[in-house]
Image (cartoon, rainbow, N blue to C red; front, side, top):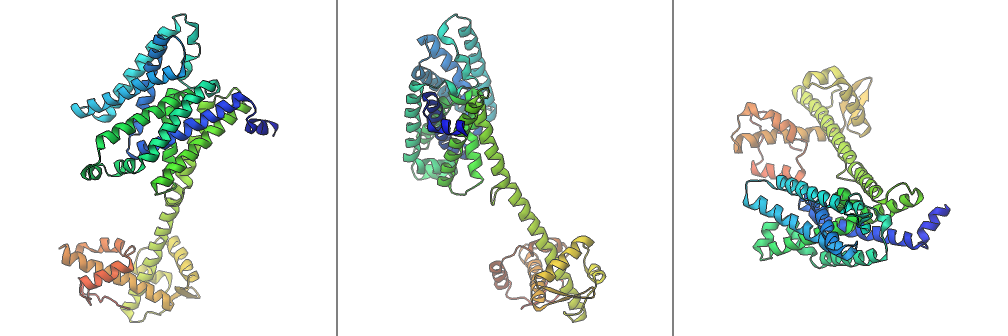
Length: 429
């Protein structure tokens, strides 16, 4: 507990630099990465992250020391150049964009490793720690780094703030943006520049190898929780900042644990939780929704079978055994018994000594299912010219998802028919 209060008191300047630096890096890169993610350019971040290495090395060779401003300029130059080359290759050759990204990534990273090796063997004492750019070391952040990162983070956030509508339109409908006269190419160039800047300021915390994760993963996690882009951008920033803070804290209480990789581990954990737990888009929600749909289909098929038995005998409230129901439609016995009990709980069926019968509500629901089935069969034969003996299976599926609004439109479109293509009566309420 003492270490917790000691860490969050920020009394130690080193802690202050690491925490503030990590927050700036992760939050700002997540904001820009949201638009990169929406434009389906996730691999671009990886390409830029690996392409900045030769720029950093070249800056060090020319300047002779690890000045953060100089290194940032060098990283920005080669990162930006890599994106331009990817665009040129994919636009003016038969090479696809993903292949161009892989080509540029490997070439630039190879050149960077080559230059880094030369620097390490040069004997220049100032090169100590330069190799940390590969995997990052947030603990090495100092005051000068923080000033540079704060300036760039402010540029990123303010740029997104001022061009939010343009970036949004570009992400979702580039053709429409061009049609209404927006300078699409200039906006793309600005977004590219911001992406490069986001990568450049993040490499010191998480390194070139892991930076792509910090650019894309917060946005991917946020996307599961909302359909609104402004909310998504805010959530991505919060997730990124939380991972930065948590990674720094873990590194503080366990000095052998590097900050950068733990930042990525935390944001990846958030992404996995979002992937499974998010409402409406999460795996568990979708699985539960699919289970409810299967249950609904099974229950409506039971009611439909009972209604059809009632049609044959002109008695809809006759008590039926499970064996009688199975003669009308094939069910899995366990699913049938479970469905019957569920329909009884919901007030659609009654049970007396193992014999099942409609309640008024159950008869109404079963009648509507039969009606929708037969209306759809008639629609397929009249408007799509499908043979009557080929429409049953399709109608057997669509009857469960037709809304009351579509039901009314079908009735009007077909002029309130009385029989289906097989001359069976279409029951109206």
